[in-house]
Length: 131
Image 1: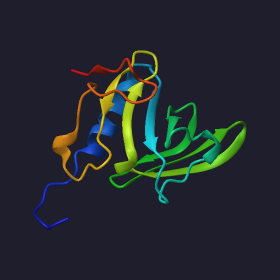
Image 2: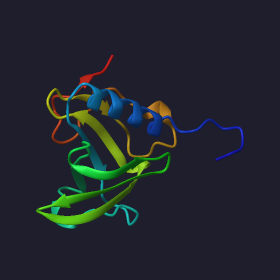
Image 3: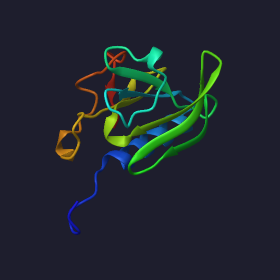
């Protein structure tokens, strides 16, 4: 990234939506493109190159939504697992109960590709625009 080029909006939008979802007493889920060596998730839960993760405070420990990477410790079928995924691989964040959230393009070097719920990802064919 050039010294004066703007930073990606994606991590800021993810954190804002996460906070809004949790503050609304809803359950935040993310859809992650798992087709990269940098994505560390339990492979048996990957379907069609994607994994859906519950990132609610009750479901995970040590959640970090950084500018570059999402990390947390969670349990999958009762087994502990340290999850790590580049922010660029997060395709969707949404509230499980309402479907409200945001869909992102995979290659987000260009933040003009950010969409608000018009192109739903699995399972959110019911995503809505958050206003």
